[in-house]
Amino acid sequence: MRLTSRPLCATLATFALTLLPLAGAQALTAAEKPYVGGYTQGSVDTRAQLMLLDDNTFCFSFMGGSLDMLAGGHWKAEGNGVRLQEIRQNGSVFPAFGRAVAEQKESVAFDFHGQSLSDATSVVFATSGDEALPTTMRPLFKPDHNGWSSSYKLPPLPVAQVLYFYMGDVEGDDVRQPRRLRVVQYRRGDANTLRVGYNQALGSPPLNLSATLKDDVLHVDGRRFGTRKELPEKALEQIRTACIRPALVASAKRPTEEGSQEAAAAAGGKVVAKNAPLVPVKTFYLPLTAMQGAPYFPGTDK
Image 1 (cartoon, rainbow, N blue to C red):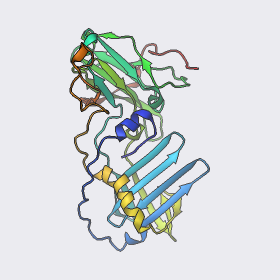
Image 2: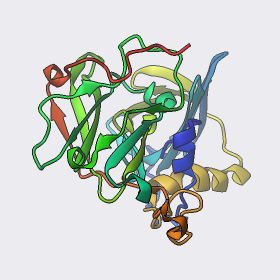
Image 3: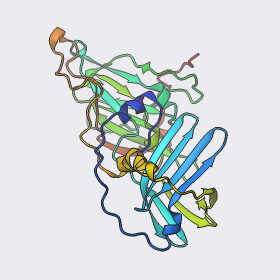
Image 4: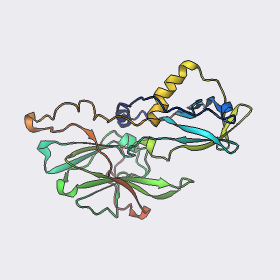
């Protein structure tokens, strides 16, 4: 699991995790034992750490710029080195929260979390009033949009036009060239006020790295990473609790946003359900040519 300091992602990070004991690991092979330890790579603005534990689990952390990341997974001997594969729990690259407002029965309001969406590439949006998937999608912002705000609200849309809504972004190939649109489909359900953002942690493929060790120096995908250091015993449980278990152990049933455990506030006839995370219907792909039309938010913030 990765965590960022973005406000929306911080909301997601508050969901409770079941910290169950990990399954018993097999003994390390002779080829794996020298790799156990911690490795650090850093500069003035960034710091990355890779911690390989003796139960064949690992934690990767990165701090730099707007991104603070934690990733956990398994590692094992492969060829002349080891292979590290990240494990992720299910989640949506475009997390969406919805609530029902009784006084707004005939329309649907969308509020986009701009600061997290600024990390996505060419975000697109569409709605549909039937089961047909969209063949075109409009961009939310101009390509050179900057000065991001936390909130971008669309004018209310008629309920009949929003049986489903769709969020997408441009997915790159192995050399980061635009390849296609990745689109996430949501069914609106009873919600008529929706807040949508972007989870940068899920926006890129899971880590799948090869590493080799020479003279206690770890090289990851052929590039020098850092020198091996022993991990203090007192740090191991913290690494497992904060990084590895959240990645490897299925989370408990997630609560909704803070305050959502209250009964529906029917009194006053206004809010009838608190904000709750929506579950995506599916993810599919469209060609880049499907991105058409003027941006929903053409202006540039000051």
